[in-house]
Amino acid sequence: MYEFTSRVRYSEIGPDGYMTPTALVTRMQDCGVFHCDSAHRGPEFWMHARCAWIVVSWQVIIIKPPKFGDRVITRTIPYRFHAFEGDRNYQIFSVPDSDPDAEPTLCSYTNSRWVWYDMEKQRPARVPQEEYDAFPLDPPLEMECAPRKIALPDTAYETGKSVEITETYIDTNGHVNNLRYIDLSRAYLPPEAAIRELRVEYMKQARLGDVLRPKVFRTDGASYVLLETADGSPCTVTAFYY
Image 1 (cartoon, one colour):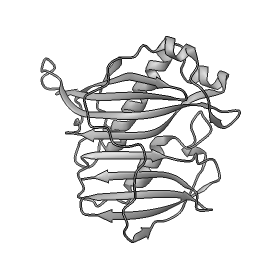
Image 2: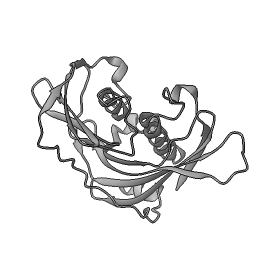
Image 3: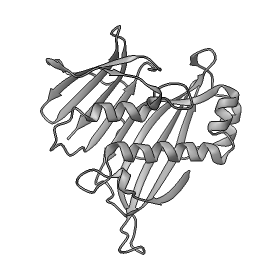
């Protein structure tokens, strides 16, 4: 287990003053990266080794987001390694800035799946023993884990405006950072939607110069956003439940 604490910044909140879903997942991603870096296996190591952990799915349960100024404790719990994969839980707790001695309140909890990815060969690779040694496993959270794959509803869809991938979308691994897909998909939510669960399935990496085309499916209480490349290959599906 690994955790870090930081206050909610203005850049992380929406119009209601609470952390956005993207900001919550950003905290989780940062916590996982900090954990890796604490074991000297973070971004600098990934760039040298030409291998890195790539997320393939998020399942985020949102109880109540922290608000501006709250002290936030973000915790990551690696609980499984298997062949090419690693699984992590996350928890986010908040403490009001007005009462720093208050008991932390659970705001969100998450299940996520990652693959160890060979950047040179552009394919998953077997998790090396050094990763097992660096990150001792803890028991997983008691939560109902959804399947990694997201089934799209059998309904009509609407198309959104295409997005060309520029350098501002690219991270140190040379592809679109997973958080950018969430932000692109959030643009198609009803303005009144209060997200209670967020799921993302990643299928293909988008890179510099690619064009992403959104397809939006809606049901009662949920929106699904499929992002495809120009040739129709699916990159991500994001499901928002509200």
